[in-house]
Image 1 (cartoon, rainbow, N blue to C red):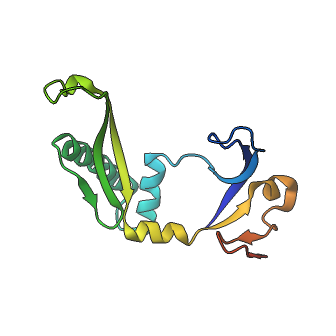
Image 2: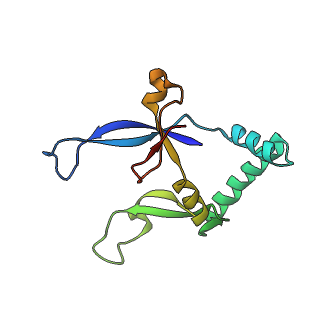
Length: 150
């Protein structure tokens, strides 16, 4: 399970006159639809794809309901969902009403096991794949400066 990355050049917004620097950025392979996720769940469980799809739909329903009822929703070791808002400030406490809310957000904070799993990711340059190396480029481990042929 190796992630692909591409290289992009960015300006430091705090130091616009400094030279641009190159950064690795994860390249998505696309989006897994609810139906595709359900199929993968059915491949790993005794649920058939339709049952897995129904379970995902119910999870969404319960998650939204819990959030809109004012709860923070913890889904096992995955993490926690909560509602946050953006708002304009008011000069007095009395003026700080719901009318000052400009946007409602849903935030997800990954749980420990999900964060730990993400730290085990390895990477390969998307340019290696596009350049015809077909996966023969080095697999890299973040932060170590190490690469290993695979």
